[in-house]
Image (cartoon, rainbow, N blue to C red):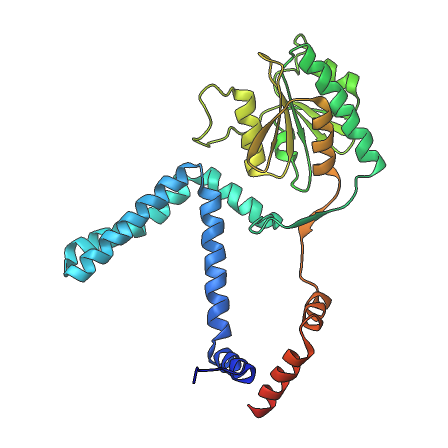
Length: 303
């Protein structure tokens, strides 16, 4: 006679396994896994990734030395790993600053689920002004670098340039980046509908994956996007191509219409994580067959 496991037995096994499970230990493992994933995501494409690989090799060698009874080698490698903590702080200050800045903003992006509200009328107007100016700059092949502030303040960046505090307009942007203007060499910093500074100096990206053909203007735009949540628009002086840097990535914009849409998408509202609502769980439970829920309740009472 073939073995047959009834549904109550299955639910009883499930409940027994649930009681054997250490919820705190499971939560601990999940948090460590998320932390490691986030650390690797931040280090990807930077010099820190090479350091992590080196530390991983040292840990493997130290374990082998421990199993083999090589006490001297194990001690030396342990001292090297301990000293590397100081080396990390000194050599990888830009990467650590970017990581702590993202952590302070709560911008982890581990899962990638976000919500965004609609753009306001003022935002639409500002985006249209920026797009119009960028389009003319691209046609004339005039180099430009425009940093749009979001939640992370750019006061330290604005302090490196000349304060303007002028209302945003296409004509003003065009005049700033005109090659004969003393303020054209550098970045313009925007805060909502105000040009707060021009001729600003941006931090250069330390990403090793960038081609050597990438110019200083693009490297500076990417560098600021790695350290803040700002949106940086770049116009190439050589080709007139338009690029958009955001969150440590840079994309080419083939048409001004696409730039307008992308800016509206990024500036349209506040971002946040999508949370699982309690009524979602309730609806999912109600979707189960009635006999399944009844069997589960009966097994729970017997337990």
